[in-house]
Image (cartoon, rainbow, N blue to C red):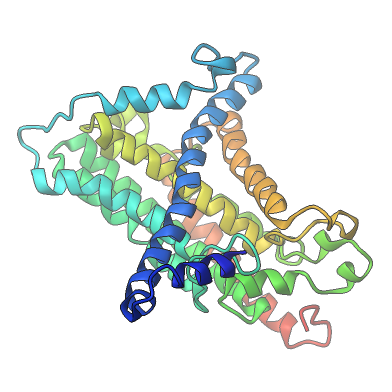
Length: 358
């Protein structure tokens, strides 16, 4: 169907410049809007789902006043933030102060260019997709640093220092996790990584979920999920905005849409880490059992991603906030050694007679 739409677009104008230059640009923009429009809706309603789920876990209702069952709450919040005044601190570096939120949200949205939603359903099917996503998302830390420094506030600067150190620390562990997955898959392309998870002895007997990477790479899976929580500065790793100590971290001086953009970036990053976890460890769009293969792949992808993103909220409801030194110790002294050891173990496994990824 997508190929038919592209072919139809080529024939809209008979001129050669249309097919050679204009239509590929227009088609690229259409694909970007087709991904970003639902994503922004998902980001908005993730805020509602978080408040609802936390409410149920704490034996209360959550938002239930705006619209039926509180379903219009994210729209009310968006209108409220859009109409708030943008206050610029008198001592702030104005250009960088405005640039901070943009630098924070840009990587969280740009990384979706290489995320596939089906076997041939991706904006840019690049062979080094994993590397591209890692490179794009690592830029996000600059937005945090710029926002903290440009605010010219001790609280904001301290929050930015914490955030940047934490994000860089856990990126290393996540990078090693990706290396292990790439080793067993033999590819940097996310589509091929998912295809490899659809082969094996378990698939032959219909138990597809036992051939996914989460089982043979269980320690790596656990490290990747927890590092993803830390990377997005989510509870229990949210010392960046530890209200008891440093007010609200790097965004303490922001109001209105500046504040809203930081929140959008955080929730977009949650969705990104969740879908990346599903692709790398939970079989992407593959069904867990062969008898369920009649259900479309995009439904399985959505259900798995929703489960992983709900796990973020579950962790928030369960654990108290870590101390900053505990977070750093977990990243440097536990996760990095674990991933390095497992890297060697998997390397030995791959060259042994018991290699299950042949």
